[in-house]
Length: 569
Image (cartoon, rainbow, N blue to C red):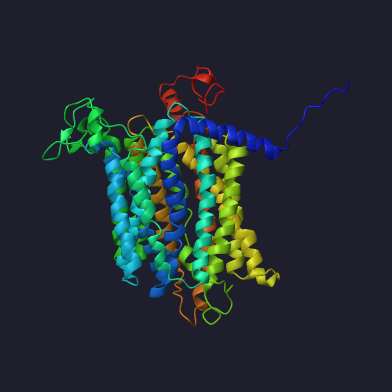
């Protein structure tokens, strides 16, 4: 008899089978109802409607619609940043949801309230556009507020459900980002089709109305599995009477009465540092947004953003555990030194032949659909690469490698804005699709560890607050980068506005701005070994921080790592 040779599966098949097993374990941990809520918030709203934060059906048209007002690029970039400011306000939403209960729940009421305001804002944009740029920005703010609130509170539930399964966090985060990529791609295709058929883009703002309503119903039915307050500690009654948020809650409650509005003042006193920090970050976000909304000078915004960054980093070290403070400081530094030139490059790509004879002259459909779609596809590839090959790397290694790769991918932008690619005989379309969109994939690789590291640092009982501080700090760093980019554009006199003629001079110095953006990305590299722990992404960073603080160095590895084979995920 012949000896049977064992079949060897190819690498993709092995990776697919491994991914399937990890997903099933993840499903058994989260449950069906919670997965349904996660799909609606993460994939329908956050990915399809908002495009991952500031894109999709409600984000992609922002620059297109603002350009109809003939605003300069610097002003458009600032207004877009203000419209998406709810992502920076996560700390304030986090402390409210952690400590302020309405009818015995501390997450459900906020989701329902923001869903209602989001529905009203979306209908107003669709019905009354064109409107003033300030009113348009304000209504967009409330649309993004619902999505950011749902995203924050869902992430807090992720932390709660995976608190004893640290090794599952890379799997969870990779799964979310992988599926979100395809949803973002679908939204880009929808926007592109509407542009092609000349459908008014303001109609897109009706798209979140039904999802907002469905999420409100799911949350009201408690599909997210939120527990009713059980009266372990007294709530300070801030309401005029006592009642229950839902009638069905009566049979579950242990205490005889629940305040209409009750504050867990004991939690506030015990965690006053986190609460103070959340108010500081929220105040900075609101302050800079107000400066941007009312046409304050870009110089003042630049100074305010730099000063605010120093204040935030100082508060991290004064109010938080040293290990957490280091990581938060690096997140802010990494993001704020990646300055944005988004509004100026939008006009560079899409200006007409009459406005910019030397430009690429891409159609707006190509800009949104092809450039955005190919970039999203490559970002999905980046998620797959991370989830398959990099999720066991140490944080230092993954940040160093991806940061260096991202800098390399920024070099072709300088050549493109200088129009050197045409001297080399490379068409703009080929050059853009071969260079700029690759940045999206590398940028995805660079951002993946941020999500994992934030999920790993939240202590029990304060998941929403601390995660909100980390996420809000990261988003505020991005806002600083946008304000600084507007300052650089202003200083270099790069202020295109989509005029029909004579904009060539506005792009003369765009390559210099891109070079500045590239060079300052060197700064965060010097902070990686100083601020990022030399730990694997499957390690429990809270335990590692405790061990470091108590100077216990003789414990075996299996006591500080939760990535062993016995972990169910």
